[in-house]
Length: 342
Image 1: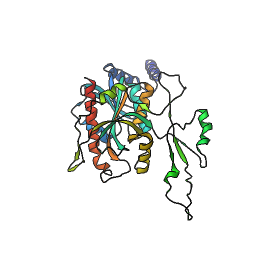
Image 2 (image 1 turned 60 degrees about the horizontal axis):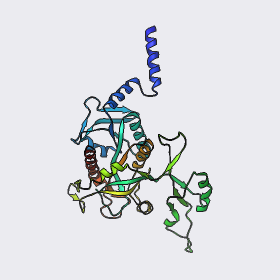
Image 3 (image 1 turned 90 degrees about the vertical axis):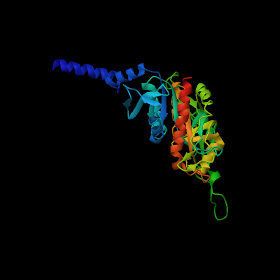
Image 4 (image 1 turned 30 degrees about the vertical axis):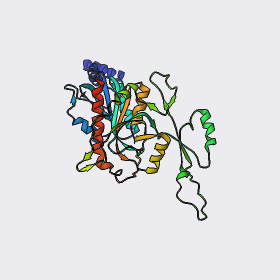
């Protein structure tokens, strides 16, 4: 009994020394990392992940096919003979950020590729096109003005460094659709929204000393590889329904993300006109921000599944074209991975 008590004490101390991760888990993580480094592949949802799992180019590891931790299922294997760890995040900026942070904290990851589908804010492109933005921004961090305040009232906040008018704002009065009986415009009490930069704390910075960023750039080397993807042949039909032209892979200027599903044409136009955004989604900027803070190479590949908010007879077919867009995103991902080896 005395020996058993000593063993329990030692084991308990060992686990406590490693925080919430058990000794067994640490050994498994170390075994996985000894065979790294890996490319981290971050994917939002099951309908985007399943085509990868069913692809013959993805081969699970024979000893460590997965590692479960904190509600996440990390799949370990090879894609196009490149060692990869794949994690599905689930919906939203929070889930995407947490999953990416865990991926980079637990494993030996040399870079991150994020892929999936997205809404489209740019009417120049169509369903099925695969976009690779050069910059990502989180457009869900707002300074929402009180009614009656004007831009000049933001000065005090700007002096403190908490808020900024550097980036575009949304003026709700531009979208009033009714007036009083005497035709006088009724002021919209929602006033204005100013988009704000993120506070970040880089891994090589001073702890608790904040920096700010709005447009997060993708990795320059990854972007040059992405420029070689223009000739990837993409799908253009779902059953007997085909797109007006064969989809293309295109490098675009910007993409934006927020915890908002945008099915509104007016707000789509705001994002496109103010930010030159093409793909709009709920995860990519979170992945970009975590990688930016951790100083890890990052790029996102997003296939367009619909024109957000509608606008044509084709653009409301998001549900029908999700499988096609998901497959197109995967096809571009696989080609990108193959070019990493060349």
